[in-house]
Amino acid sequence: MSLDSLVQRVEAQLLPHVHIESVDPNDPVVVRKVPFPWRALGMGNYAAVFWHPEFPDYVIKVYAPGRPGLTEEAEVYRRLGTHPAFSECFYRGSNCLILKRLEGITLYDCLSLGIRIPKQVIKDIDQALDYAQSRGLNGHDVHGRNVMMYEGRGLVVDVSDFLNQEPCSAWDDLKWAYYRFYLPILAPMRLKVPHTVLNMVRKTYRFFRRLLPYRKCDRKAP
Image 1 (cartoon, rainbow, N blue to C red):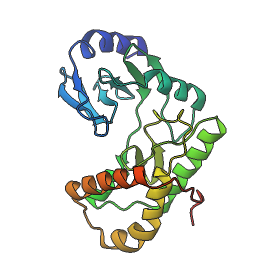
Image 2: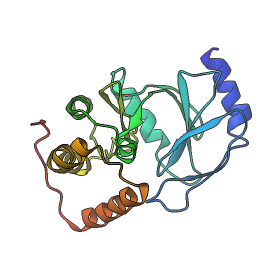
Image 3: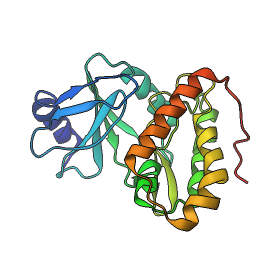
Image 4: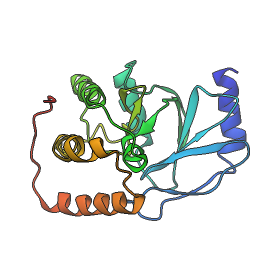
């Protein structure tokens, strides 16, 4: 199936019938309706990602009504070009992007399922963020829900905030927790962390991050 054919399906079948709501800008959007045979793969704070079984190499990121960022995200992908840790953008519509599909499992879901996260994943993401910085971008708001692991390698799946040049310690803080708590405590025990606990940690972290000043950590892994 060609990209042109996918664009036609998106414009005629997906966009007129999908129903997405942004209830709270600090929480993932809510998908109320998905037309068959499209499937929802994930939800972020601004948009949801969909997939069609006849086009397995692509995903469609659809922004919720009233949520900004599509133009900026398209520009980020233009600057990134081709890199193994990032997706690529092939088409920009009025409220959607067609992207290369990256397979894997988010680090958030690794924690909930007790799947071990090797050091190489962290190193790959560090290197990917260094590459983004070399392209004039800033790894802003990189957290456990928008980075993935596939066959032991790290991937960055959400770059929507990379034009934001404000300092952000989200990835540094996650990496600090990885080396101080995950590796010595959680990883050896293969503990499965319930989603309720992960969500509580996420909301608590967001609260304190708004209160505490930004601190820059050394990006290089130990």
